[in-house]
Image (cartoon, rainbow over all chains, first blue to last red; front, side, top):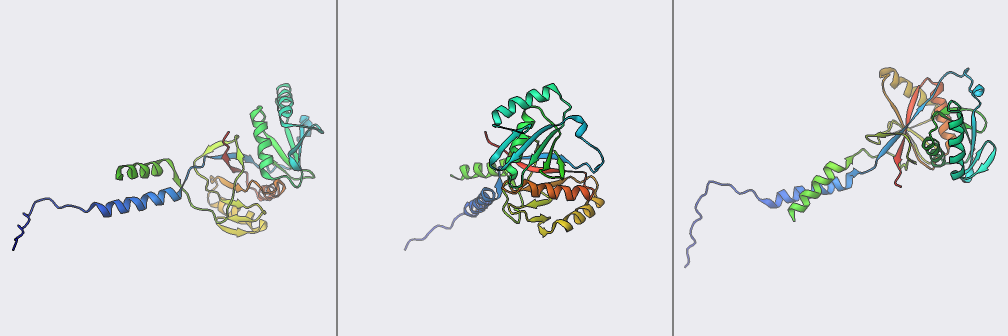
Amino acid sequence: MIKLAKPKPSGKVLVGLTSLVDVVFILLIFFMLASSFNDWRGIQMSLPSTSGESVENLNPILLSLDGGNRISFENQEIDSAELALRLSAAIKAGPDRQIIVRVAAEVPLQDSVNLLDLIDRVGGHDALLIEKRDGEEVS
Amino acid sequence: MINIVFLLLLFFMLAGSVEAIDIVRITPPDSTAGEQEDNGIADILMDSEGKLYFESEAVELANLSAELVAKLAEDPERQVRFKVDGAASTIQVIHVLDALRNAGVPELVLLTLESIQ
């Protein structure tokens, strides 16, 4: 008969690594599923309550946006590359001119935001989005 | 092996941000304009069909302004954040903004995602 020697009691207590690894795996899975890597941006919109104030005297730059992403500049339909050129020229000529975008009923928000991006890129600010009838909103 | 798992864990903990999930699935528009925002948490949500949600509850446009004005009265410095689906109609967004303006909301922030170019 073989007698096994009794292990000598040592001072150290071994912590099982397996359970630790399990917990780390669970944490990893949680963070993989729950984290998002979106870069958020915020477009500031001011909603002036002064309804009496008129913007017409500033000789606004008129844009209009229709379904299918058709853009008109001063009632003339043009593509976005040409719009960028003409808009930046118009803004340079008159930096104080208000930009008014008239939006048709079926335009998705993405198209409007794209147009606001373009206006922002060519140096425009204070663009005013209005419905093709009335109602308004400033960005 | 466990080292790599630790590294991955650290990466996801530090690089990502854990956010509450909205009650409706919203794909905000891509944009290059606007200022960087820390997170995508919004007060008002609007899905692609134009349904409105205020603080994770469906609301009608008429009630939205009243609730928001009440919230703003408690904390006037509060920034109102509005998250809209990119497929929603611009006109509906303008109608909501009109209603809020008439209720006396001075400004808000439209949340967008930074576009990858």
